[in-house]
Structure formats: C-alpha cells, structure tokens
Image 1 (cartoon, one colour):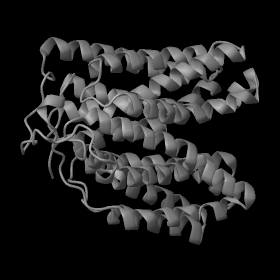
Image 2 (cartoon, one colour):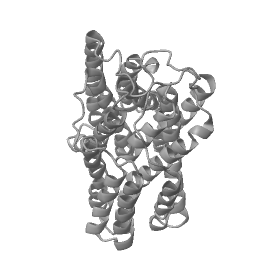
Image 3 (tube, one colour):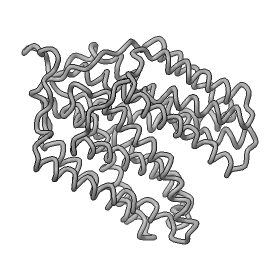
Length: 394
C-alpha cells in the first residue's frame, strides 16, 4: 500500500475541477426530459456539444500551436473555465428561449472542454513524479460526481425546484472552491514548481514527437473511453429492455457502473495500478458475461459494477501513458487526449445507438467484446512518466 502524497491547494483544485466536469456531463442526461418540455426536443442536441467542442477545438489547437507551453498559466484557465461552466449551466436553464438556452449550453460545453483539456497537463506539471496516481484520484472524484449528479437532479425536481438547483448549486459551489484554492496556492507558491524528473530529458527531444511514437497510446485511450460510454450511456437501457426491470429500477441499477468506477479509482490511487491492461479487460469481460450472458437482475447489476471496477484505471493510466510520450510538453499530450475524449463522446452513442436502432440493445452490446479484443491487441504495459521541469506552469 502506497499512500498518495498530501495534496497541495492546486492539486485539490484539480480534483474539484474533475468533479464539476463529471457532474455536468453526467447530470446533463438527467435534465433533458424537463429541458425538452421547456424549450423543445432540440435540447437533446446539448448532449453532443461537449464531444463536438473537444474534437474541433483540440484539432484546431494541434494544427495551429505546437509549442511547449500554453499562452496562459494553467491555474488561470482552470479558474475561468470553472466559473464559465457554472454560468453556462445557469443561462441554459433560466430561460425558455431556445436561442439563449443554447448559448448557455455552448458556453458550458466550451468550459467543460477547456477543463478536460487542461486537467491532465496541470497535474502532470505540478506532480511530474506522481502523475498517474493523482490523475486516478481526480477521476475518482469525477466518478463520485457521476453517481451524485443524477440523484441531486432527481431530488431537486422532486422538491419542486426543477432541475436547475441540482446542477447549478453543486457546480457553482465547486467553482467557488476552485477560485479560493487557486488564490491560496498562488499565495503560498507551493505549486510553482514540481519535483525534478527521475531521469534527464535530452535537449534534442522534440516538443511534439512523430505520430508513429504515440499513435498506439491515443488509439488505446480512445477505445477505453468508448468502452466506458457504452456502459454509462446504455446500461440502464439494457436493464429495462432486455432484463425487464422498470425504468426506475433500471436507472438505479445502472448506477452500479459509477459505483464500481469510484471504488476502483480510489483503490488504485492508494495501491499501485496494474501495468498491464489485461487485468481490466478480464474484469470487464466477466462483467459483460454476467450482464449479457446470464441477464438476470442480480447478475446484470453485479456485472455492470464489476465492469466499472475493471474500467476504473483505464482512462487515467492510458492518459498518463500518452503524457509519457510527450516528455517536453504535457499540454500537447493533453490536447491530443481531449481529441480522444471528443471522438469517444461522439462515436460511442453513434455506435451503440446505431446498432440498437438497426437491431436491439442486446445485439448492440456485442460491440463491447470487439472493443476489448482490440484493446488486448493494441495496448502495452505502462511505465512511470518522465516530464521535463521546463514544461511546468501553474
């Protein structure tokens, strides 16, 4: 057992940033029924905005900027992004005019994309010797938010306040915490410089390595995120349509995915995560068999939770593997990682939704073992990241 180092204010702010983004992305689906009643069915397009922004913005940044460091410090971007996310959600929900609401949703999507793109680079910069574990811990808090957000929205609606308090109050509160922590971190200067790497980085190491050096890492990262969304988006649908559970029971059963993810991420931030992806693939495969092969309420919910446990270290460890390929610029790696997230946010619903429309959700879920087979072939063991002190910015 290895206890994570005591987090500094900037690292804690990164954890809060992960949590509010997780709250927004996972609460968005829960607010759609009421939002569609207010402004029409066009509101369903809001779920596509974060993925589209991540993909387009990341592609533009990769194309136009190839430097080692961002134009603005990480903490300034995180502060602005957190406040803009809360403000965007507020605008999205306080009006019945579609144009105004869509503008708020766009602002929130851009802010969420900025935070998603920022967080890995921030944590890699302030903790270059412990990037993987702090990223796992940050994603653990995001998983907790994924469980809490739909529940909070449901309680808010039940109490007669509509969906807006269940989204704005937690995200706004998180933004305030981020502002306070960043001010404290900047005042103390604890995060102005990270530890020196274990090994020196050669001066000739390119800022952006050739694609051949990192295509495998970004492909595996994208596949891992697609697997996550196959479960998080469609597990409740499977429980309802194929297992025969009521919509309420299916929604509650689907939360087993987030529970497995949160437990696994907190555990692997304390215990060293497996270097090989095969452990995760095996756990997800067993969970899939329980869900798809046996398909009783108990076995299916257990399978969803086990699959979540198996998937829990995938994103942070594979993002760290991508960061390792960019030792002179974690920002460049994080931007490419945001493109992977954008591709997954768009392709996972398209893949599963398209197969479900053509057949049924049971057949659509056969995409999961195919994705697991590709991961088994493409992934390779990870090693500890080595990042250059010159890339550190707060």
